Image (tube, rainbow, N blue to C red; front, side):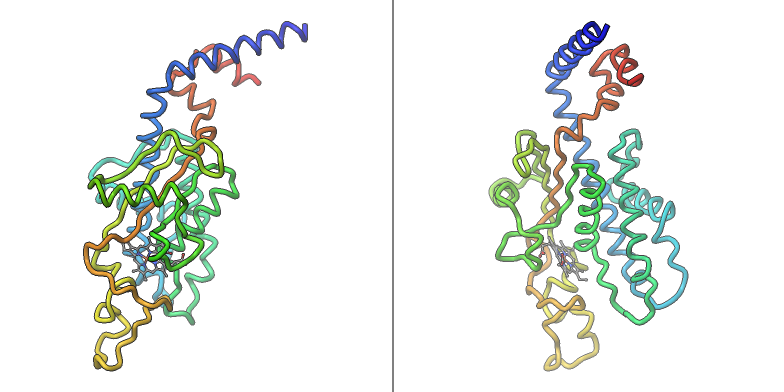
Length: 280
Ligand code: HEC
């Protein structure tokens, strides 16, 4: 009895690997769509964090839209406004986990956000992305999201690029692509899908990364008193509008992308096999 069950399981594994291999091409293009959407969802959330800076930093008042479902609804609205398409259906465990992790990060910052002593809370996209990535790692989701730049332009050493990111950034200098997807890469020697979107400096980036004339702390001051230190305490880089401003790097381990439930959803494996595994 035990032997025959083992044999059935073995046969199923063979069947499974056959179906998975034969759908390699569609799997990779599907991964590209998915990783692009994850990156866009993240971009929408950072856009929101920027737009909400005055709410985040204000003393007192109702800040409930920064938490829970209301926060996610705002991300969805920001996504639809920015990318001019509907927010993706949340039919993947990774999507729902990503949104849940975003809520958790905001919740972790609740005391800070409601601190009435601090006029600048330091909750900006770069810190949000760092905390989000930590959260995703804690949850074992195998998704990494990181803002990075060339080593010579970096503010925080924790954001230093790895070799793959350096190569991606260099490739934008040569070809003027909008993003860079790689389905044959690794992270920590684990096979991974990787995606990079370069960012150009927009007007609001200049508040911190631009010249002292853009520093909101200098408003109304005589030029001789202008500070080169931005509101976050870093020395301003003197970058200009439209300059390369680093980019967003998203990595998903292949093993986490190919969850069994998703293989079933996508009909990569037979319905019968899905039921078999569901019974496990
Ligand atoms: C309120 C000030 C502020 C604004 C506005 C701002 N940044 Fe930053 N940025 C920072 C700080 C502070 C860090 C370092 C964060 C950390 O410690 O991880 C940072 C880090 C980064 C990083 C990661 C690499 C590094 O230097 O550590 C990138 C990329 C980046 N910013 C790009 C941008 C772009 C592009 C914009 C506009 C879309 C922008 N930033 C707007 C303050 C700002």
